[in-house]
Amino acid sequence: MNPILFAVLLVAGIGLVAGIGLAVASAIMAVPTDEKAEAITEILPGANCGACGFSGCSGYAAALSSGKTTNTAMCAPGGNEVSAKIAEYLGVEAGSVIPSCAVVLCQGNISNATTKMVYNGVRSCRMASQLYGGPKDCVYGCVGLGDCVNVCPYDAIHICDGVARINPLVCRACKKCVNSCPKGLIELMPLHMARAAVLCKNHDKGALTRKECKTGCIGCMKCVKACEYGAVTVENNTAHVDYEKCVGCGKCNDACPVGCIEVIIPGGRNN
Image (cartoon, rainbow, N blue to C red; front, side):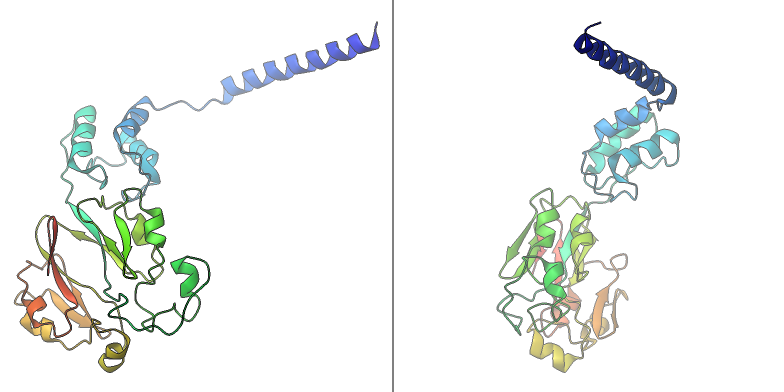
């Protein structure tokens, strides 16, 4: 037999046997598809943000399909519309999604905060923070290099005068920005009614904070005394608001001598 023809036939035979083997193996080892989970995944927005507590949309869909959870209101980006569609598909009662928005707890812009150096390194908050806590004197404040901007899939975040700002009308509460901030300055706030927010996380004593930022919390306790609902406390030289207790009356805002407390209302801010 012609050596070339023999080589061709040999290779073709090996390929045929290997192909048959792979086909048999794939049939034997095939993982059954969960059609219900796939249908739920199609309903979900596809953000894969993990805000639901599962490993993305497919993880949440699998949990709903298997009965691991019956809560249809765990997808913040999808909101009540997605919750209703999932409930209709599963034949269960729809849960209610509380509207939320991410808020940057810092006002250390170029007018308020002082700086200790000019940073010319990698444009990353996480990288810059490793160099003496960042370019600003306040090591607790927003670095302003946009790590949160880069991860937001909804274009809800922009850097304004050196500080990240989030548009509450666009934010879908996916938590990606929350997880990206190396300073832990971003948190979710319920927006179904007005709430007060302390836009500062500086833990230094008041005198030092004043040198670092004009609008930094000095822990003076005036907001605590002004609140009639026990919603405001001061811990480690910084005021905190319990959103469950806050009614958005604004008395803490009026009492704050440095203006670091804002009342955030559905649809925007009320300074």
